[in-house]
Length: 150
Length: 150
Image (cartoon, rainbow over all chains, first blue to last red):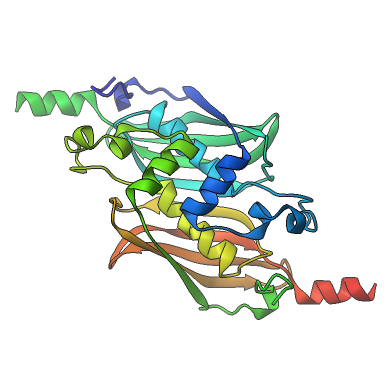
């Protein structure tokens, strides 16, 4: 672990996993619309959204994606890691009241470059709503040691 | 255009472009931390963040990515389009007070499947902070016509 209680690359093994879950409320959707500027009617206008294929308001895809960022930035690898990339496939809509569970799982570890690839999946119940991979730069206990000795 | 004033796939040509810009304020970062659950100290604790390689607080990468969602959902292709996927490469940090311009440009149009690929780039001044591609399902005037005639 680093001094911020995040994992160093040397701590990480393929298969390690962490989850962050959050219920998406109307308040989240309203605040996300304001912060992002994405006030598309399918997110904010129930009467209009009811006429679409979704049959009612849905949350922004990037709102659920932000729970992946929370899982990575606060749990695995956690503080000290730097987000380099994220691939997102939006598979199914998330509706107000749904609880989204974002699970991140170590797929590969590159000790040399201090980089890891994580499988990132968001589910509502058993339904996958987002999947993809994240690319993260991690702290290294060996690099800290070699710096402190130089 | 569809009835929500978004582009139909038949309206779209390679090279068409739109931009959404937003200044990232402290309020945006605080609200995004609350909504996402990503309260990593590098975003919220100036004293700690000053000790990191960033030299101060930075915005969440997914906050800037959400401006791409705004450009797609409200401008090009705009209302009626369905976000299928997004690839993100985080290239440089965004700091409180920076203005992020998210530009989306049509890279390819698949009339058969009513899908488009957009190049998506976020810049602060001339610095690219995020790049990647988006995959979007678009409304089709031909499909509407064939439905209304059947």
